[in-house]
Amino acid sequence: MSEILSPIVFQLGLGAVGGFIVGFALKKLAKLFIVIIGIFVVALLYLGTSGVISINFEALWSTIGGWLGGAAQAAAWLVGLISLLPFIGSFAVGFLLGLKMG
Image (cartoon, rainbow, N blue to C red; front, side, top):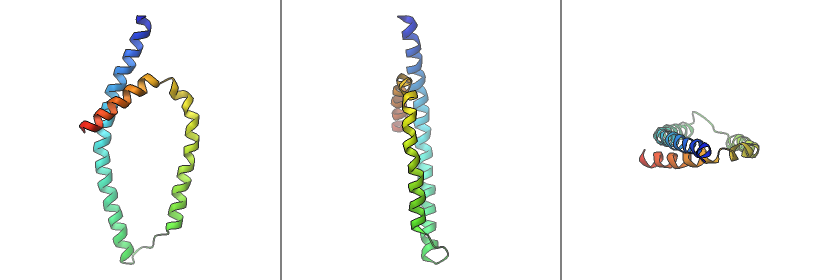
């Protein structure tokens, strides 16, 4: 029984600690990223209204649609993820705690 329990406890502990660190750092970086994106959008709107640039919204939406087409390939990864469920579960809990405390 200890041959099975020890690796699972190790995976759970490592996943929780790693998830907490990643969640905490991601929340801090997300705040910075949102501020940068906001400044960028405001700058684009200003340049668009002052006539400096012209934005082709059809090309923008078609490009974003092309990026989202790659999401169908992610289903192939599901088989590999099933073997990592204990790690993923504890990582998710640690990640959410890191986000909450960040």
